[in-house]
Length: 152
Image 1 (tube, rainbow, N blue to C red):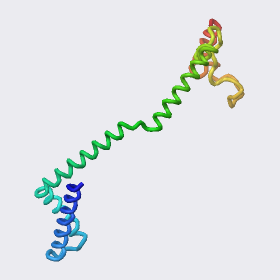
Image 2 (cartoon, rainbow, N blue to C red; image 1 turned 90 degrees about the vertical axis):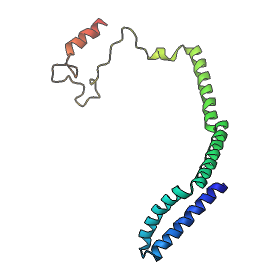
Image 3 (cartoon, rainbow, N blue to C red; image 1 turned 180 degrees about the horizontal axis):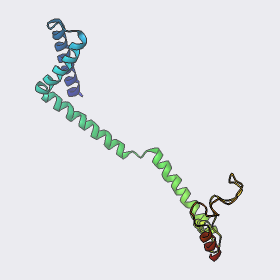
Image 4 (cartoon, rainbow, N blue to C red; image 1 turned 180 degrees about the vertical axis):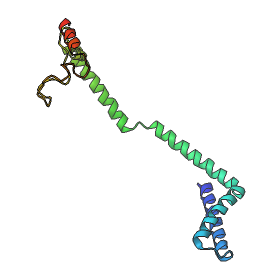
């Protein structure tokens, strides 16, 4: 912590000194002097504050690694809740499949069941009337679809 504080104070002090020099000795407007002071201070800190900057960076890195290690040890409450919920769902699915068979079996169509024709029926705006293309529908295979349905 000491290295980071020392580096910050040194940079702020350098900035203030350069800014004041540019305002009073250079006669610059304070905003323009601030912009130039920031650039000059950045260059000076790279040249002269390398040891303080490295010490601050190492301290910062150590603190970050310690924080990550603490965070890795803790199990978030949301993950614990999710694991418990998954276990309950798995148990319910297992119990349900033992009583009623596999749940996916009800989703499989029967072998001889007719296929639904999309775009037909009373829900259509024209009341389910055949299209003007001779009943071919969107696929253009009206008679072929009917023949296929009859074979199934």
